Length: 520
Image (tube, rainbow, N blue to C red; front, side, top):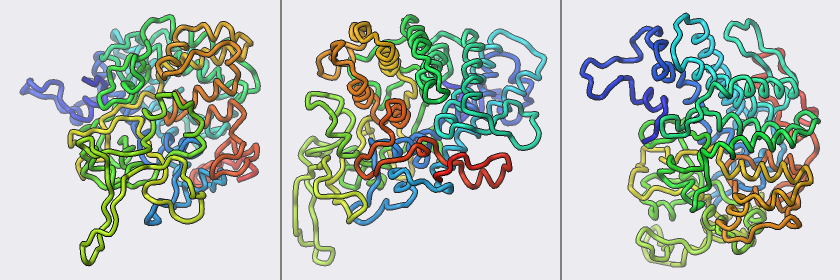
């Protein structure tokens, strides 16, 4: 069972299903929440529920997918999904009023505001009890995570850490906010639980804190000009030496419908067809990528949008033996629910006479299609298939959320960050000998890398294929010096494009926000 206060809060509103004298949270005094850890966790759940907007159509996750070389949104066979907001992201010619940029900004700063409000309320209550410091630390670390995402995207950002701050937040430099995030993690991580059982699933733990610290240090050179490879190595080692996490024997199990039991899950956003059914707080991948021909295969009773498809150059970058490719993408011959080859039957709309019938074979190479010209057919472009689609009929016409949870921080990423930190310190021989790095490769049907194989280019590709579609590709492209390169559908870029424009609506509301990117 998924254990997170957000589900108790969303369902809730009662302390016990069997207690007839139920307590309705929406009608009781705040003071009740400040009496034990469980209730305080429920009170602070707003900081977690804000995270769930991660999986929506216009989200920070989908924004980063479109900014990377993994995914593209083109015109489909009926000319849909040609919205300019996607073209801007895919070509890196972005306007300040882009909807995904604005939604991503709100994701970060609404989350920060929620944490500031919760921290203020907790810190101004006189009651004390076991576990209070733990929940306080969770709120500090979630806020640090939101700021981490913000400086990744925008560099200098408005900064406030108090509900009592008056006036408009002023901008702080990326380096200043980097130092703040680092200090928050170092100050509060030991107060967090080191329990990675289902009791703390979806909550911030020491494993999450150290993974966040590793990611911060791994990007330090890009963000502050100072290398922190040794510090990144040490932070990863804390996660590895905790013995709390391990690699799944089967890669696909990390993304199954009921994937809350994955031993790789370090920090996850739980989703549900029941509790996260809303316009913005859902995981809507099946809607974004599948088309009408594929929906019946998975028992889906909703019309998907046939939008997100894989970029052909990215799919071509896999080793033919890499089993992660067919685990991540839907391409080639597709099959119906009974396992038979899927055919497409075309009928004359007036006479109902069958005029054509062909196998439904998805061409991941996008042969004959050039981005920006014409319309692609329904069999062009690999669909996103990394997260298992439900076949139990739960994805009804009025439902938008999948049941799969999203593992934002996954143990495989820690292993790859550790290896990268070693390689960047000229320790490729040590990196090649890491047992779990060897396991990552053999799990994918590939031979382990030797020290000679561990070039930065090869390591970058390993991250691409292990972590495809998980939201880190843009950050990796920048760190490995590839973000400004041309790729399918995108011309070469300029240095200013590594930072996103500040949303025009937010600049209009805060006079302290000024354009920091002369190219936009």
